Amino acid sequence: MTSKFDYVKHRKYYFLFSGILIIAGIISLLSMGLNLGVDFKSGSRVQVAIGKTFSENEVAQTVTKIGLNPGSVTTAGDKKDLAVIQFPETITKDQYAKLTNEMKSKYGNNVDLTESTVNPMVSQELAKSALYSVLIASVGIVIYITIRFEFKFAISGILALFHDVFLVLTMFSLFRIEVDLPFIAAILTIVGYSIHDNIIIFDRIRDNLKHTKLKTTQDVEDLVNKSIRSTIVRSINTVITVLITALALYIFGGESIRNFMLALLIGLTFGAYSSIFIASQIWVQLKENEIKKKKLAPSKQA
Image (tube, rainbow, N blue to C red; front, side, top):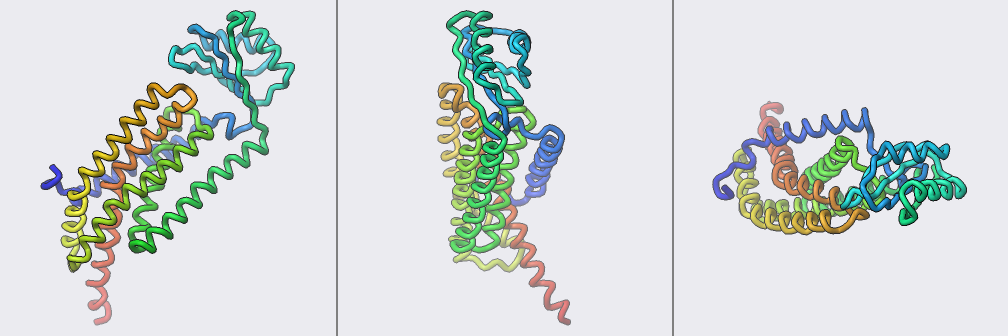
């Protein structure tokens, strides 16, 4: 497969596939948005270790009984014995004490509650900091790739990077997975991995360019196919190794890092896909456009 498959020939289908996912993501984000955790919106989040299976409706009724408004109640934990109650407003110490007493009265004294609260100003600052961190990383990557390679590689790399990040957001929006602070750490990790994977192929393209003159669009396609074929085994082995590790941590690492590892699994998968089928293909398109313009230039002057 690696010696015969034409990776460049079918690039329109790769773009179409990614385009469909991006459109689905835009629709989902506009209609449903992200399922933001307490880290990014004001309110309180109480995790209740009940120690046995329970009904989410029953927990919600128990909370409502003491005059509190549970925005949502979800099940968590390996044994599905944790109740996560999301309150749209911050709860007071007295309300938390009442909730603790009511839960212990309902499910026994072994029930353990953990509460986290974020006010509106803090949540806004966290959201801004998360956005700035991704933008600063992106600008730094563009500058680095432009200096080391060329601007067309930088454009290709940054578009592939945004492709990977946006598709992770799409999956979290579609499946209503909670977005919290560890999610931002996962996004930054994905950014680093995505650009590293792209650079491997970009570096091989640059090396092959030293021995090749690109006179026609076919020359460009042959060059990129040759470069991908010589690096794909390394790329696949790398991503499989990382995915196995991430999957093991997702399964056995505990509830606190589950969303972080899930974001990594999704992002690493899309990152491996985009390095071969998106980033390098965008560079092909840009380079072919440049060659076509050069061919048209003399006839325009005439």
